[in-house]
Figure (cartoon, rainbow, N blue to C red):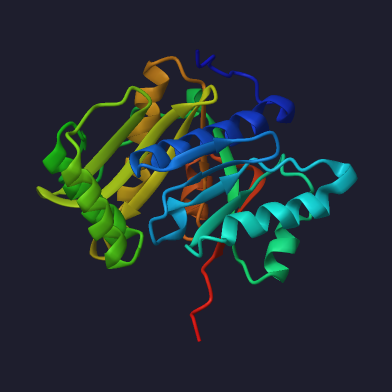
Length: 273
């Protein structure tokens, strides 16, 4: 059961934020057909697909007495298949210098502040931009449109879109209670996306993306607020997200506060010489 969190103390909020991120990523892994490994020292999934977010590592808690040796052994195992990987480092990661160790081995770092907001502070009176409509994705064809807009708006490589569309074509659309995708249309044309993931007792926002030609019109803000208002109607008190540098000021204006830092480290196998 997903007990809804109302406590903003760091001792409660940070574990909930991490739990939401981890569960959302595992949900992605299952969609990709990945093997899930929930071990005493690490949570990770492996799909073997050739992009890093399809092979994810998180929730590291290596023992203090032999952390370095255990880390080295596990890293060797994870990189052996020679496919791209992503390793998420968050507030509870142990040892605390794990990210430095990854960077020393050539992993690339991308930081994202972990932010949260009291959903009671969101106003239902916020007007949508003119001619913008927002709909929940409830069929396979709309999901394909959502994927196209999300990948272009997020500036992801075209091959990732092709992969996601291939996976979608293999499976019938099924609604999932904890995952809700939103598509924004401007004058009827799809231009923006967001995703609401309910887990860890909080409402997590992901995949807020707007096509370049539709930016700076308040559309990203609307695609963030509308899902959170729906989560509030379901009884949720706290909304969370991990911000890109582009979105940081937007989320601050909405009332989000920074509580921690998430760092994603990515690795690709060296090209064969």
